[in-house]
Image (cartoon, rainbow, N blue to C red):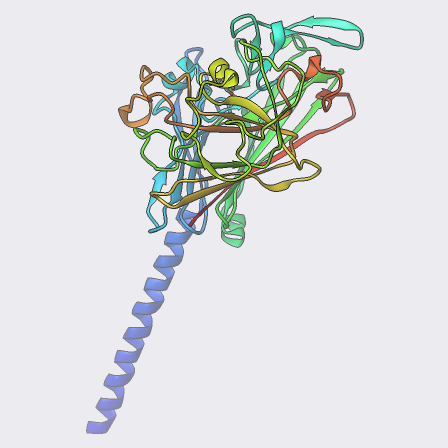
Length: 393
Ligand code: BGC
């Protein structure tokens, strides 16, 4: 009898142990499941009464990317440092009012033509077009009300099954730009997909169609600060750009049309170098840009080329790779930030506290017939793929 009760007790204990474990496993599963869900929350109403939502993408390793359907904008992106601490590494605003007033294009998709077009003029099929002028005498980032100031349609986002299977998540948004908008010919339908992979890559895939011959060159405009502290400058970040040439500009930042060799100039980032080392040199191109604000001619751009640019931040150990299929990259280091703009958590963004690496065609390409074409014809599909990949060293 005694041994029977002992066996029973043991059996009960083992069962209890199994039950507790099963319960905690199922709780854990539940936890990962809710974690892996793309979360949709209300972000705010635009002044013309449109609702804007904020979507949180997550991945298995714990990265979080928050995106709003106003400007298809990345509002925050957390990446781990070398001790596994996640911090937000992009600049942005806490609310829709911030994005509506924004003049810095924080985190958004800019277009129809990212970057500058001289005097906003170009010829296509023998006809001259005049685009809106919004930057001195030039056209910048799609004009007065570019794609960054539009409410995009959310086409869909990944469900929990996909997220759990892939260890990441995605969202797809669309914007239809009408014929004549900001002076551009043709109605363009642009679709942008943001995918956060299990390997800490944020991939941005663009596709566009047009009903008439037009020009197109959208890009992504996140300001990165890999320290995780937006009060610090980006001058100690180590930058590499795989480019032997850049496109020198005039005072209005319009390319002269020539390529210039980076050898023996402050524009040489073929080997990783701290951004601040040569930024204040008495070099005409740096005077024009108030620092770096130039397009580099990428050595490789046949396919989705890995590591055409990298950024390493030595204190946190964060390392960011940029992959793209575009021929150029604009490196801009926040020279126009002046401490007057209040960003997330009330931080006043100071001079050179964020850097942009904008994959794109060269600026003013519509007026440079020898440069890679930016013309999109009906029946053709515009495709861009750009990846920002995060790891640590
Ligand atoms: C341009 C800068 C411009 C900035 C606006 C960058 O892409 O290169 O000249 O001031 O965008 O935020």
